[in-house]
Amino acid sequence: MVDTYSGICHHCFMILSRYFAIIFLLVFLVFFGGKRQAVADEVESPEASRAVLDDGNISLDETIFYQDRFIFRTKNVDDLFILIFAFERGRQKEGYYGEFFGAVFEQAQWSFLEGNDKYSYASSNLETIFPSYYAKVEGSAVSGFVVTYDGGDYTLRLSSGPLQSVYNVHKGETLNKKIGITEAVVTLKGKEYWGDLVHETLSWKGFEGLDRHKGLYKDYEAFYLKTESGQQIFFHKNRADRHAFLKKYSLADTLKTEGGVVLEGLKTVYTLKTPIALSATNRVTPPFAFYSVPERWEVPINPDFGSLFLWTRGKTSINWVFGGYLMMAIEGVIKKEGEDGEGERVHGFAEYFP
Image (cartoon, rainbow, N blue to C red; front, side):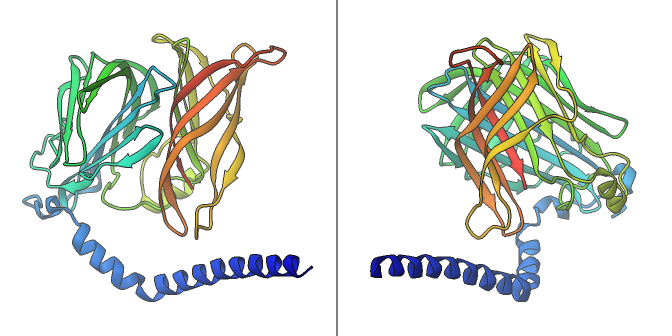
């Protein structure tokens, strides 16, 4: 009886300690958030913001944002290796700017690259990717890309074949997002990883990439998968209020709420019916966070294809009290109703914004 009482008290103490910590953190953010933000603005503002154009001002029509993201996945599910390179650049009233982000999933663990940072964008040609301090892109979608990174923590080289455009995620007058695929190889520490490259491009007129636009994402999930038989699966779902976001920032367009395809080679064999029945079967709450993140999903595609049963093989995140960003290595199987067996294996990359 005493042991039971002590266990209950210990459990209550742990719960109260956690909530007192959350309350303390909130008080800290309220009283010191303004000063911290002022310091952050001074420290994080890229050097490119000083490269103001001659007139010192850029109209909304001239403001533009570009992103090239390279998502590499090995063909071997059991020895899964994932590499993410993202190059953002744009032009707004502060001038030209660039930002690099990268991450590696190796031996069941994620690592953010040390060279992730904003950088001075010395070129006004935003369609061409100007090098960051540690990463460089050569080539094109027509000839294939060579992306190199050397930041002290990793020395990486990604080489690809010519890209084939396979999926227009969003096509509009001011916003275009599309996906191309090809085969590629990554060299790390003398070892070669062979697999597939997903090249995702985004151009967005009027979007200010230096600002954190609240309301762009809400409970956002995106998946970049491949089956053992070679089919490519891309889909996303965003629960944000598109109309409220457009009104708040006076934009002509924003990202589509949802969409997805299943590809056989370069051919679309299935277009996911909307609303996509994407449901998380298990969620967890990060420490000191007021939101939960998904860990397992069930996604029925159609009777012919079957349903996806997915789970995280490894994840990493950037957490805030009220938001964050989650990157996941994904594994799963495809099962059809009435069929026995383990099902075809599927693997890839996924991301989540609360």
